[in-house]
Each structure stands twice: as C-alpha cells, then as structure tokens.
Amino acid sequence: MSIRIQLQDARSVYTNLDFIRGKAILSLTRAEDVTAVNVKLEGESKSRLEGEPPDPYGFGGIRRRREDIVTETEVHKILYRAVTVFPATNLQSAKRDGVYTFQPGQHDFPFDFKLPFNNTCVDYQPAVVNIGGLQMQAPGNRDRHVKKTLPPTLHAFQDQAIIRYYIKATVVRPAFYRENYRTEYLFPFFPIEPPRPAPNRLESYARRQHQFAPVGQPSAPTKSSIKPPSIFRKGSQLAVGSNASSTPTTAPLQVCNICIDARLPDPAIVTCNEPLPLRIIITKLNDSPASIYLQLLQIELVANTVVRAHHLVRENLTSTVLTSKSNMRIRLSEIDKVMEIDKGWWKDIPLPNTVAPTFDTCNISRTYFVLVKVGLTHGLGDQTFPELTVHTLKMPVSVYSGIRPPQALLQAMADSRRPLVGPQAIPPKSPSKTSAYPPSSQFSPAAAAAPPDVAHP
Image 1 (tube, rainbow, N blue to C red):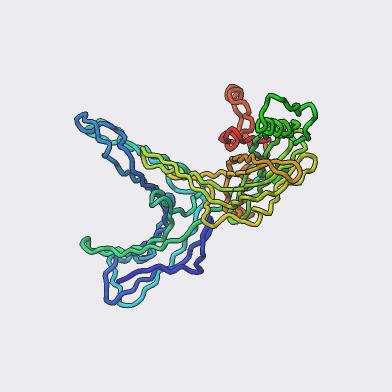
Image 2: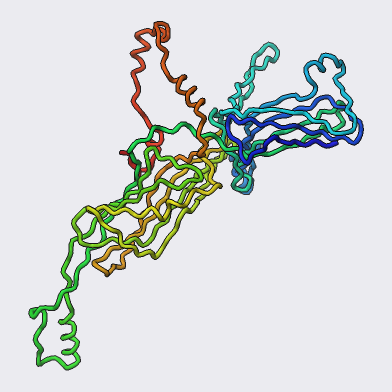
C-alpha cells in the first residue's frame, strides 16, 4: 500500500486566495480494509532555541550549573483545513461498521482547498476543571498569538526558525495495531502584499553631517621669512637653516561642511525582485571651493529576525549586500551646492529571491533596514587630500512581496471602511462615552520605531 499527492496545474509558488486542487492517489497490491481517507491543508511555524533554564535554582533549591542547557520548542498551527475525501456522506449512513474493502489497483480521491488570507492560530482560553465541586482553572497557554496575514515560507538559522506549508493525506485503517499510511506534499508560499498608499512626493531620509579638516594652498616664501646668514654658524648649520627658512608656507582656506542624505519614498517600501528606489544626495553647507570625491559605496539590506521559544528570545541579523564598490575616486558634479550620486550603481540590481517579505507571526517575526555606507574625500582641482570619511546611514523599511491584491479584494476592503448613510446607520451614543474618547491624531508606528538618525518630513 502506498499513497501520494498529485496537484493539478502545480505552481512554483502559491499565495493567498489561491486554489489548490489535486488528488490523493492510493495504490494497492492486494485487498485492504480502510476506514477513511483524510486530506489536510496545514501550515506551521516552529521555533527551536537552546539557552539557560528560566529558573536558576532546580529541585531542592540547588543552583543549576552553567552547563545545564535546556532546549525549548514552540510550534503554532497557523493554517489548518481538513476534509474527508472518503467515505462520502451517503456511504457513511449506509455502512454501520465503517470498514470498507478496497480491491488491488489505483484509487483516486480529488480534493480542493482555498488558501485563506489570515492565519488561524488563536489564543486558547484556559479550561475550568471541576474537582469535587470545586472549580479550578487549568493553566493556560502563555505563548504569544497574533492574527495577521499568513507569513512566507522560511527555513533559516540551522532549523531555529521554520515556517512551512504542506498537504497531508492519511489512510485510516480499522485495527489499532495497524499503522495508518501518511504522505506530505510541501509547497512554497508567498503572501499578498497589503494595500499600498496613494503615491505622493514625500520622502523619508537618514542624514549625516560632516566637516572636513581645514586645508591650505602652498604659497611662495617671502623675503621676511628668509633669515640672513650669520658668521657664528657653521656651514652645515647654515645650509640647514637656509633650507628650513625657504620652506613654503600655506595659506589657510575655509573648511568644507557637507550633509549626506539617503532618501526613500515615504512610506519606505521595498519590493521583492525589484531594485531599491534609493537616492543619495550630498549638499555643501558653505561656499568652500573644495571638490567632493566618491571613494566608497556599499548598500546592504539587513534582516532582523526575532525568534521566540517560550521564555527564550533570540535576534538574528542577516545581511544581503546589493552593491559594494571601493577605490572609485569619482568627482561629483555640483549644481547649486547639491550633488547626487549616480543611481546606475544600484538601479539595475534587484533584491534576490532569497529575501522574504516583512512578516509577524506568533513565534517568529522579521523586519528590515537599509544600510548605506558612503566614503568621501575632498580636494582642490586635481589634487585630493588623504582624509577619507565613511558615513553609515540606516533606514528602516518594509519589504513587500510584489504580489498585488486583486481589485475585488481592494474594493471589498474599501466598502467595509466606507461609513453607512442613513438615519439608522450610526447608533446613538451617550454623551459621556463620546466625551471620554476624543478623536485621536494620526500616528505612524514606523516613525515611532525609527532610529535617531532617521527623520520624516
């Protein structure tokens, strides 16, 4: 006996609201008794961490050793759909014992699932147990539960964080000592991105200011700076003194103050498999005649993945380098004290397909930020000075999957937010409740979580 799953029109990746159709194929070489054939669509988020136990003191008040390491595993069923493909409803009522004999050969059982939009993990309430007329509340599940969009498929950090989706078929056999046959079919999942805001001309930015060390321009020695020879000096001392006195002096120049900006559209959204909509602008803050040279440029997309397993929490940073250039020595063209670095260094480099969109689920969450490193020097004319300054700009971003929601879904969301019109649309409220909750102002969580070097105009 063997069972396998075959999908109809299998895709390379599935997303929300997609239909998964196929059939479970049962192959028999001899007659077998079967009770039922079940097919399930499941998704689970599993985290596994090692660390110190929550209680430093063990049994008897004896302090644990540092070598005592515990391994915590936390599993959440973020998706669960089940259907019995055999027997049908009419057969269940006709057969009393519930045992069906299948003849040798191949038997097909079609199934059909639709992927939902949000996860199905809920916060279970603690049960109330009645013991001898005394009601006691059983300890509840203290794990964190959220209800949001289904997260993408993930397998990272040596099995510390796993998010997987699969279809499981089970052949239930009547005897308890006979093992049920099971099979799983894994498939990749990528969520639909949330509705994007209307396009605007606003930009979010990270900014750094810098002042180069003051430099001077060599000038010819003057007559007053050359000392006359003395008869009390020896010849060697006279030669040394004459050379030292003829060293040219430098005329001090005004220092060069600059401002480096890294800008993204507001809100800062980055799309998978697309290049960064990034602008890097350098502005002079004074009238210095010095020229600015680009020596180094590096752009990274850093992922911050937070993995939780009961009392253990761990943050993992992974970096994806989009471009890295050094020893460039490119003189930046200046227009009204504003210089913009050519986008050609990164505009044709899309995000790799290994980058997952931003998500947040019960025990695993991931956020992103863009790290821009700019190395600059300055000079006069064709001469550059050895001072090299590297400036790091950090900007939090949201990574979208690039799978746009269908128009019907957007229209349904707009209709749900639209206020009803009519005398009975809005129920009357008491004056006390109305005055107790004044209208709240606009608040952006991304702006509140932004680091100190990020500002939003």
